[in-house]
Length: 184
Figure: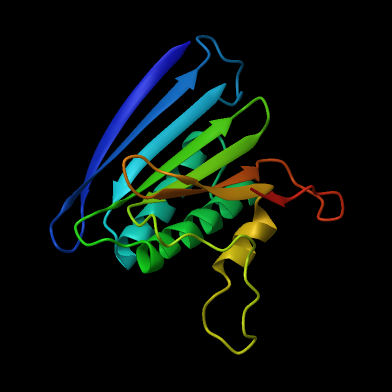
């Protein structure tokens, strides 16, 4: 096994530095075109709309590095889930002076991508099930999209403070008729 660690620094509009780190684990002699056995990437982003956009862009880049091109179903699903969870972290979980964290892990054996978005606001937890929105409303559908794209999603307390909202997305096409989607 070979572990590759990478770190990238980017600046947001206020000139604050965001450090994005990732570790990818590969077989020493992978078959030509084979996906990594396991891959993981992490990043800290400013709790702002721009930070949410950057998180989504990095998720697409990481998925591409792991063999899922930007136009693939898996990459699009992960990008949308990251975008919605990051937007919720910015809008509902923002605590002044705290960034939000993103972790994406690919399990090549199961074909699942686990997306985790962590913020510092422990008191504001998402509802137990995705809310139904007002048909005329301009927002409020993020968790409905996450629920539609993820096999499972849920929340966990984050130590020492905050929460992590996570979702598991399949890299394989999933039939909506046979799906076993659950909220945990």
